[in-house]
Amino acid sequence: MPAKYFPTHGHLLVCQGPNCQARGSALLHRALWNHLERTSLAYYKRGGTLRLTESGCLGACSYGPALCVYRADPAAAGLEEAWYAAVDFPLAARVAQAVHDGAPLPAEHRYGPEDGTQR
Image 1 (tube, rainbow, N blue to C red):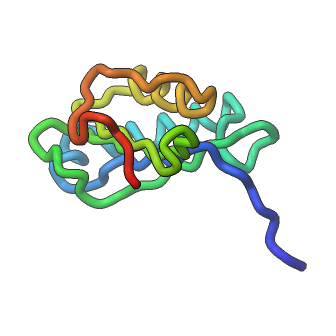
Image 2 (image 1 turned 30 degrees about the vertical axis):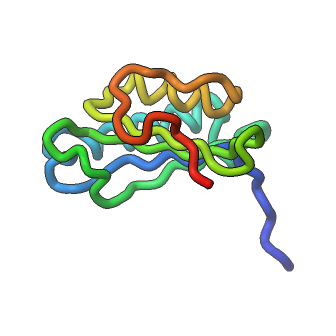
């Protein structure tokens, strides 16, 4: 039997490097995962569209926890990306909801590429 395909709108990565873990990234990942489950935003839930993954270092070692998000950007025919430092749960939840809704991503605590597109 073939595996079921779960369409996604975006992918969230929470850094689990040692500096981010020292600043609570493991707890942030767990809290965000529980939130995606409860609100049915997780990709395998009915109506859910988000993937969440633990990642290696995202480059904001002194300002963790760090969060990175990728989502399709049809206007740019590529991917939109956003990188966040010093992420707390409320910010992570707002980012997740914006990705799910296709809304503009929050500007607070962002770092990295200015326009956020990959071609």
